Amino acid sequence: MNSLGAPVNPLDQLEREQLTATVETRIRRHNAAKRIMDVGFAGILLLLTAPVLLAVAAAIRLLDGGPVLFRQPRLGFRETTFTLFKFRTMRPPARGPVSGRDDRQRLTPLGQFLRTTSLDELPQLLNVLRGDMSLVGPRPLFTHYLPHYRDDERLRHTVRPGITGLAQVRGRNHMGWDDRLRADVEYVTHTSLRTDLSILWRTLAGVVRRRDVVVIPGDLGEPLHVERTYPVVDGLGLRRLRTSDLDQRVRWVNHPATRCHTRMEPVTPESTHEWFTRVRQDSDRHDLVVFEKATGQVVGMAGLIPRAPGAAEFYVFIDPEQYGRGIGRTATRLVCHWAFEQLLLDEVMLTVHRDNVAACRIYESLGFRDVGGADGRRAMALTRDRFPAVHLAGRPAPHAEVTVG
Image (cartoon, rainbow, N blue to C red; front, side):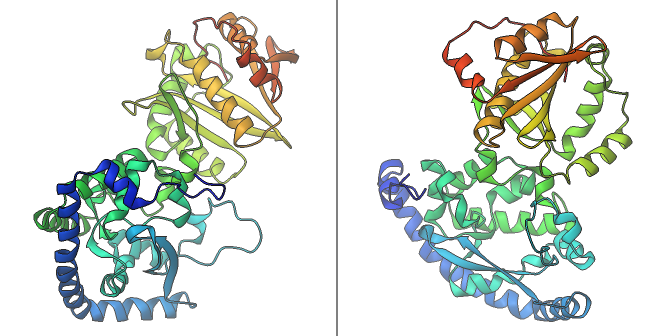
């Protein structure tokens, strides 16, 4: 990337390096043929859905006021920017700093219905007629994602973005970024009109059944530019805790191996969902999961709870079936690295039972130092300046498990 954060290699250079001449030719021919199909189908669909479009527009104006359409710049064909159209489903954000986690509060009742039925996407037929988009193709993503794509993932921009695509029919919003972008590239390199017709049919079936619909995409993950700030150590990575992780969290928190070293009270699925609804509104709190990058399997959960300006309390617990693999130590390194490098915290604090000798040794090896304690627990802290110094020294780490937060 250059100093502005934009990719250095032009897209046409990446095509020459990563695609065969045969594939490049097939993509160009497919783009030309599909443009004819797009104009015809989009024109027909606009005529057929005109009563629905007018009814939705009138409902938005009547119930919510303000603009009917939501307009946003997106990255399109050949990495050019265009304006994406959708029906507006949210109220305008409050003035001043916005956490980015208030989508649930801003979503209107009508907007929830439009998202659930996918009717909010209908105005993109105008984008198709204008030549910005296709009926089928990789979904158009935010312009600021461009510096965060890997080179092969940028091949998704060699075709027009679509209202639906291969990633959407495979799992819609339920796929992680790596899988979604991999599916986009797979579509590009194996594109055909038969594939497009199959994707359109599967999309229609999914809309009718309301399958894989996520009203608040943030419930299932984070933006690409955020997700790729998380470090990877020893094959393990971090991501944000999701609603789909909560049942697993309940099992682990209530497991005897976890409870013997924690101060957590027993939890239920209901209490955990209530807790998650409450804490996710705190933009300074970070509840995370530790997962294997190769398989996506969740092996631990960790987090940072704000305690003072520039300081947060760390917690971690590991899947009891994964004890003995050193995951606790790696999880601690991951979270501390992210806290200091991305959140720019000055200090990470924790408390640990004095009799949990293995955990105490791990924390000490990572640079944590005693700052107090009571009731049989040690209060420890790690500062930003000590963390890299300890790792550069290459100190040996005991192979043990952390089960406390």
